[in-house]
Image (cartoon, rainbow, N blue to C red; front, side):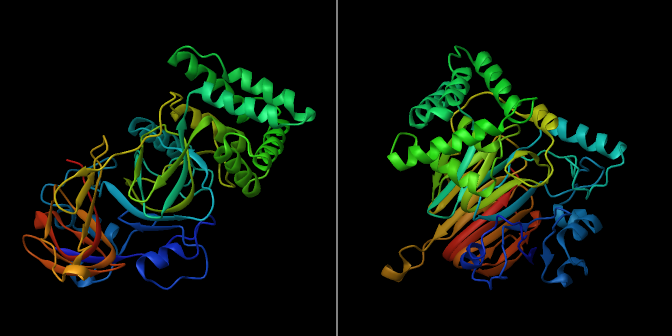
Amino acid sequence: MFVRIGNTPRDYAWGSTTAIAELLGTRPSGGPEAELWLGAHPASPSRVLSPGDTAGEADLAAWIAADPEAALGQGSAPDVGDAPKLPFLLKVLAAAGPLSLQAHPSPERARAGFLRENEAGIPVDSPERNYKDPFHKPELIYALSERFEALCGFREPGLSAEVFRALAEAADDRHRGRLTAFGERLAGTASVDEARGTLRDAVGWLLGDGGDVAPLVASVVAASRRGVETGGPFDRELKTVLALAEAFPSDAGIVLSLLLNRVTLHRGEALYLPAGNIHAYLEGLGVELMAASDNVLRGGLTRKHIDVPELFSVLDFTPLPAPFLAATPAGAGIEEFRPDVPDFALWRVALGANTAATGELPAPARIPLPGPAIALCTEGEVQLTGALGTLTLGRGGSVYVTPEEQFIEVAGAGTLFVATPNT
């Protein structure tokens, strides 16, 4: 069954006022539109646009709860909490400014944290809550804008030490000693274990382990300004410092950003962020796909709840390269992105790029369905055909596809993103 769905973008303050509307051909609200959620997460379940298809249920979460076998397939197994669930959440994300420095828990940490906060009597909708549900939240982001800017994962501390040496050289006498001292604490790690320890100690101090961080933040910002003006090295990192300082003055995350990989995704590239990866999206438009969770542990660059001890319990301090996720070609016009978790895989189908020139439509593309799927059309118009049903989807349209369709055959001229389980 093909069930048309829709939703209202979430109005987080960092969201773009135009990017989602321009992508999907909708009318902008006039305020920030940060994330469009397509899925069944109870915080913002997708509306069912044809309730007659779902026995009158108005949203995906309600339909799955009322008739899990129809929505998720025969023999849908109970999940944590004794309720079947859609394992993934598809989003369109539009950042006009930086998101919080954050990481997400493993399945074990999520279950334990959720139960602990329940036992403590913290309401699920409390702003002081860390765990909104008992699930992990690995995620991938696919860049739709020409550039998508991000911080993600710790890099080798020796590389960050070089940044602080450059800052010290650019700084005046008031700031030079402070920058040199912090850079020295990052240098000289000879093994992965030493690097983890160095990063853990540095981040612990930055995020409030009894230290006075404000003078270092001020020194980093002042030296970054001088470095940008004089055209020194690490221009991208220093410009990031200045942008973060404008959005969140005096925040320790400004300094912490220099310990992380600074990544620019170009259109069509993707990152995969597993449990424990500290990251912050800075600017850009993308398709985001994740396990169906809203568990976020924050460490800075935010006015929301921060719990440093809990964040430390999930962080992976191992220095690693930027976690790019390469696409696998899966036929003409088809790419698939498969992370190392069973919750989700992302398919991108792009058909008909040369149709205007040739006058000929391309051959249909076919995607197998290992379970339920959600499809979003971002360009053109495509015809979707499964084992039982068919549907035409235009730009901005989205649809939930039940497993009984077995596959989606995509024809026409357009671009389609499809989320499925990764099995």
